Image 1 (cartoon, rainbow, N blue to C red):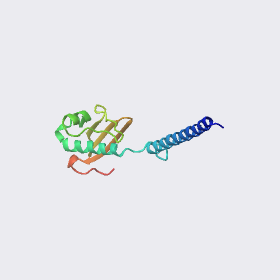
Image 2 (cartoon, rainbow, N blue to C red; image 1 turned 90 degrees about the horizontal axis):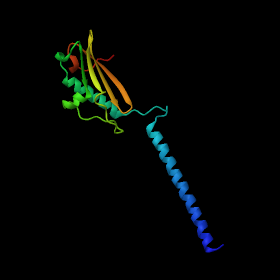
Image 3 (tube, rainbow, N blue to C red; image 1 turned 90 degrees about the vertical axis):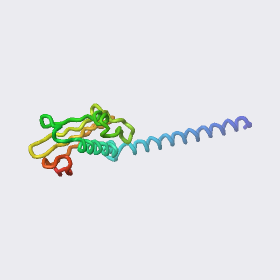
Image 4 (tube, rainbow, N blue to C red; image 1 turned 180 degrees about the vertical axis):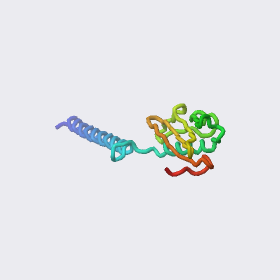
Length: 147
């Protein structure tokens, strides 16, 4: 074999090795991405920041609300209004998806024996409702009632 053929053969081997390394790295990246994105039962992982955002909204409403705001035993406040009134800072998920301020809201409803507080938060593809109940005597200033 000539020098030229040896170099060509060596280059072919290097190309094969580089291709194998690139494919292996790509496979590792895909596996890591899938592992991070999904739990073992193939459902999306829980975004703890999302749940914290719901708690922040709930706390903002509890600090903002007072009885004379109830109209027909219900009060609704959108996330946009919370932003406008500086009750809460901009919310986003751990995946940096902004929460939709016109679709997200909190609703306080006076029932016969308690208050019901629903916090609906819409961020990206997530749409969840957090419901809490409070004693009529002390309203939203007391801790939530266990249901």
